[in-house]
Image (cartoon, rainbow, N blue to C red; front, side, top):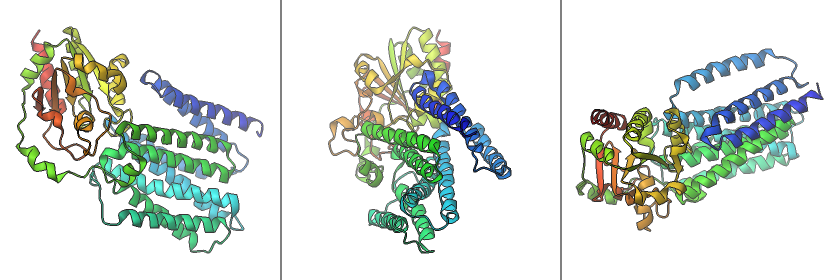
Amino acid sequence: MDAVLPFIYILASVGFVLAMKWMNHPSTARRGVIIGEIGMLLAVIGTMLRMEVVEYQWIFIALAIGSAIGVPLAYLMPMTSVPQLIAISHAFGALASALIGTAEYYKITPTPSGFVMGALSAETLLGFLTTTASVIAFGKLQEILPTRPITYKGQNVVSFIVLGGAVVLGVLMTAGMADPWMYPTFAVASLLFGILLVTPIGGADMPTVIALLNSSAGVSACAMGFVLDNRLLIIAGALNGTAGLLLSIIMCKAMNRSFTNVLFGAFGQVQVSTGGAAAQRPVRSATPEEAAAILDASSTVIIIPGYGMAVAQAQYKIREMYDLLTRHGVNVKFAIHPVAGRMPGHMNVLLAEADIPYDKLFEMEEINGEFPNADVALVVGANDVVNPLARSDKDSPIAGMPILDADRARTVMVIKRGMSPGFAGIDNELYYMDKTLMLFGDAKGFVSSIVKELGSSH
């Protein structure tokens, strides 16, 4: 068995690497998910064959409980709520890591110190803070908690004091100065810091927060691998941690933001100074009949999906509209911003679910040069990612953020429920341009009306 186990772990590791590789593109993402699942199955089987495992009844009970929770979550959670599912999954995984670390701390005699205690401290610190941070992120994404930043005077000082206290206790325990009160205090401080970390962060930054939590959960698992002398955990945790960190960097770059600004900038507070003026500014609106006529008369249409499309679950109606316009000879493309929706790839997943052809989905860098030649840019529930203020106003909270150049199309149509600001809390200048038509209403309902008009016009 000792000779077979490394071979199983190597196969599982290869599966994880291939999963990450293939999930980089929608056309191979399904294959990536399958190979990742096979890798995880091999990892579980290999771990259960380890000599340390002598009783299986509790493992099977845990598997049954986990399956009873995970299967309904997977089937009942709609695709529009995938970010919430990922956040709560991070919480479960991180809690498991932290609890295993806690069990190891009280199991090892004498009390561990040195490298083992250092790894155990890192594992439990990251595990506990990721647990509570992920729960808060879930609450914000599900809108159980306010999506706007919750701030108070001196919050960063309080947060750093709590984190510093946890780190100091971890260092003391690593140095062998472990009193009975230290570990429980360390665990509570770690849990509290997770709450303090995410509460002041607004909904606009949830994609980056999710990626960061993914990274911290991975590093926690990696540290657990050192504690348990499990090489597969080290490899898988390192892959997870690195991937989450790189994704966070990509997200920050896409928003022209720094990590410190994301974590401590309270980005997304509503700008009161512009609110009154925004309510008085005139906008042009159009009916579904008028919108359908404009789209039908176009030669090129670029559709920009956003979180509003996800909330309304309008992707299937978008597919119907795409089919009709294509049948009428209109060249339809989809422009995807890296942070559209509430997590990276959210729009790609929703559009793929509706069977929109992969070759019609274009990333921001690929599509921006085509907007000046587009007859219509149709914005479906997107806001900050098409706000021209990012280019024109250096004092704007989103100044310098790369955006989709919808304002450079010949005509712009925006499907939106009302004139409320987006996650950044600022007004969108795109809505007030002479070339822009506001299509007020629920995205699914409005697109359905457009589809009806397009279907009856030929």
